[in-house]
Image (tube, rainbow, N blue to C red; front, top):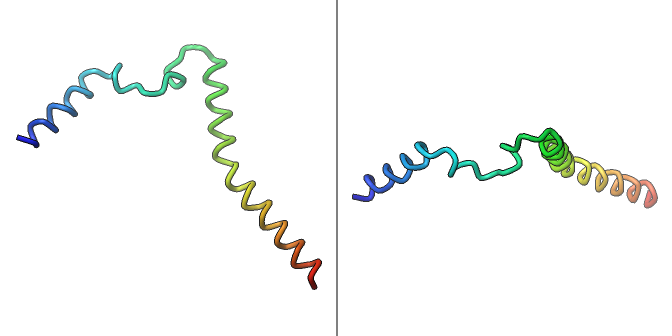
Length: 67
């Protein structure tokens, strides 16, 4: 019975793609919102690398001061 319920649940989402569109920005028609979405995605992708590099540079400088 549970397998049938799971099947019907996933079938309902596959037959109603409007319900599955969770992100209102991704499916917007305006170019400005898409550009903002892409820039935010790039920023959030690069942010951890920038933070780790900053910590690494700070640790390196602290090590150089101590030596």
